[in-house]
Length: 630
Image (cartoon, rainbow, N blue to C red; front, top):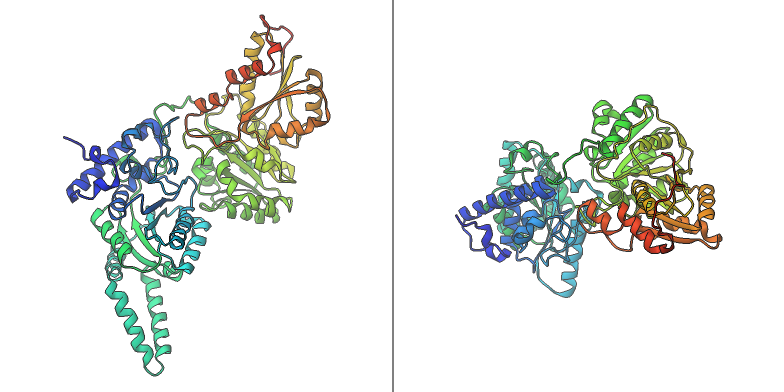
């Protein structure tokens, strides 16, 4: 039987479909998602829950003339399938393929590029105001999940939108809030009343009539307070209406006809900003995802099989468990990422000392600062790309006061298929400029444990960045030790050149040294360990002997580790230096292996860059002078 999805090349192809055809289309979209994402990896549960909503949005609104802004974009896969990307959907998150998030460069139907949470309402409001200023008449819709709505930025935008009163529709895709049948039925019936424009005409007419009576203004004011009080008890509308939005809902999120009714009347009849509350089931239509939406929120593809080695996140979590047992002044904070950061184990055993603040990175950091003023040692576990959102709080609330807050920065460096909004390639640059902050990166899982222990002991702000994925499989020492702040380690001696690497780049640099050794090139390998403060004595000593320097980092070159080393060496003459890292660009999506190879951050790439930059070093036979220290 021919698939309906095969006939959908643009949203316009949805307009003539019957209700049974729409229901079949929803099933076909879910099948396509599951079939593709289980191979490529991606955010499955969220997108499965938004299939009917995506269909209804594209039937009611005329994209790309009307603008649909998806918050984060976890739920946008059906949108991609309906907007001309069906034939390329099997390239999802692959190098050269389509992005796992909305991307303006990819399609005119992606009104705004997203990847981080809580941004959609601000962006949509900006688009709506631009429309008003230019005299256009298109619709603007922001689709935001209940998780993203925990972010303060979303409420800042709602407050501003209600103040401006411009035409904007905010759709809350609520896949977590449980509404009982009785309350739901009452809410639906009152919602139908508010959908009817005659309701507003009658309300305004009654208001004018009452106000004309003696003392009428006081009476009407009292009636409004009574109405608000009752609604506050039986319906979750008061908050949105107090922000200046007309509220519709809750609406059944898997009933296309009901969704279309609500969205159509929001589009056609209601003046000013509108808030449409849609209830969906995360993972809808795929039983494993419905039963465990956390596990199926983001999944790895078939090509990402585990090698049995624990991930750095797991090592972090197990180390935290050890440290929490030893020190009752430790607390941990996550921004809606207790599972992803490895803190779930600690939260189970010490629930009163682990805090998930929701998607509120700014609050997480200042909350930690407050705890630190009272003698606690907070560990803030946040992905590198998300910690960017709290840059001011790191400076103003932690480092200026020199508070002992520890930043455990997961997913640092190249993360892979999630693409440019999620690559953690900026943290060495944006953190190294902050006074009072110690910045370190372990070369393996054993060193991660020692650095965490060191951070707890150091009494000042300290950030530790580590990569996504499996650790190296080295033995983790049972007894954690305090490492000297700002001291690196020589891993291999040599005479021809010095390679100074940091973090995950150290292993690649070591492997590159083996390759170079076979070609007669004798390298010094230094694990810098600290990006700030630098081990000035060690760097100056080794580089002054070899006169050739290579720095390797999984970070942008601009303002990164290599830049700091060159600044240190600026007073020394006669040094030839090569920096290997990320150029001045955002890293696209693809596997970590392919992306690292593309930026010469794997062993072969590092060796080739060195031989090209220092051609005089190439010899025909291996050197015997080298001394490996580990």
